[in-house]
Image (tube, rainbow, N blue to C red; front, side, top):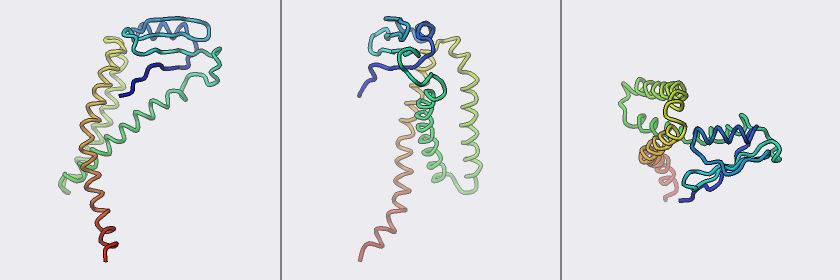
Length: 171
């Protein structure tokens, strides 16, 4: 599996950001200059380079930079939710399907709300590294769990779509 060795992140102040990343994530500050700061993980497996405005980064940090990881997480969430909905639509009896799908959506919304409310307190108590590590493990487990469900849903949908095409092409 490929590993990410170095990450470049635009920041407003490399010095202030380096202090924050070091305190929250336990990264060791290798160097701090006016234009950039370099931090290493304790095991030196990856490096974080914080690029300040004087480094030549034209786009200031902010919402634009935050949208990329948010989009990746959103895409993963949509895949898991679509797999769960597909399985529910196939396996739940017609009489209770609407109720179960509504309950599924309510659980998803409640989980997002609880996560948004709990995250600041959890980061304050346990630290950012612990929270991110737990979230990464949970996300991987959910994605792993949803993989066979997505395959079942695709197989069932594909077989319904392909059968008429196969029939129409035979003589």
